[in-house]
Length: 161
Image (cartoon, rainbow, N blue to C red; front, side, top):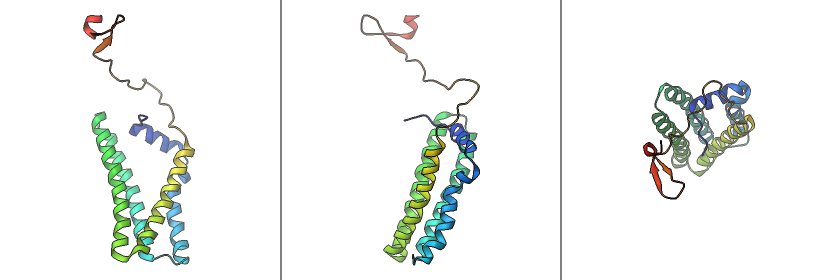
C-alpha cells in the first residue's frame, strides 16, 4: 500500500482546482432537488446529504488535527480511525434512514451517498498522484538490524561494519 502522508494529501488537494475539490458537494446540492422531483423520499435524501456533508467537515477537521501530530504512528492511527469513523457515519445514516422510515428512505440515503462518493472518487483519480515534495527526500525504512551474509545465514549490523 503506498505511503500517503497527510502532507501529500494536502498537496494533492491544493493542486486540484477548487471547483473539482468540491465537486462532490455540488453533486449533493444538485441531486437533492432532482431526487425530490423524481419522487424520492425527502427524509432519506436529507439524511444522506447531511451525512455526506458532515463527513466532509469531519475530514477537514481531522486532517488539521493529524497534521499537528509529529509522530508518524500517531498520524497513521488517527488517520485510520477517522477514515473508518467517517465510513461508519455514512453507513449509520443509511441504516438510520431505513430503520426510522423504511427501505425507500434507506435506499434514497444510500443513493445520495453513493453519488457523492462516486463524484469524489472520479476527482481523486483524475487529479493524479500528489506532486513531489521538494527538499529532503522521503524517509525510508530503517536498515534492518540483521543483514544477509554472502555465504548464507545472517550477521548483525554492528558486526558487519
